Length: 80
Image (tube, rainbow, N blue to C red; front, side, top):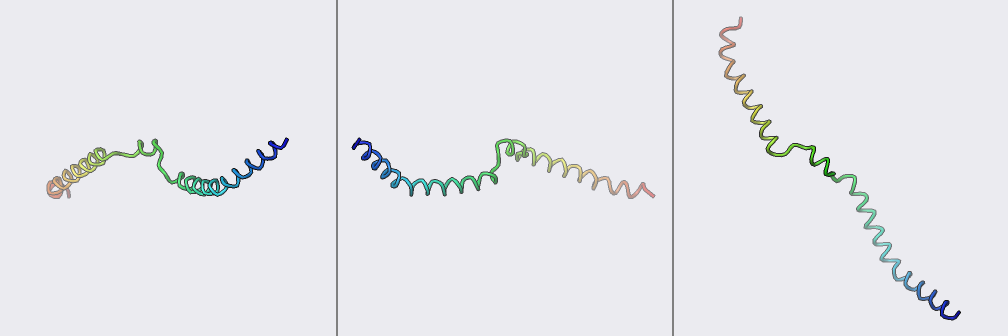
């Protein structure tokens, strides 16, 4: 039975040494959990347009604008 008492004392000593480490890990985990809601998920990133899609949209808008601007002189002459 004497070994059980020394085993218990040894286990308590190990826990006392681990306590600061566990507290530090707990603080780090809290910071990580606080950051997680602000991070984008893979689905969020996949749903956003990429650069090629954005350039295509800009090109289409500029082409449409040039058509409208090119048609203005014609419309001014032929509309009342």
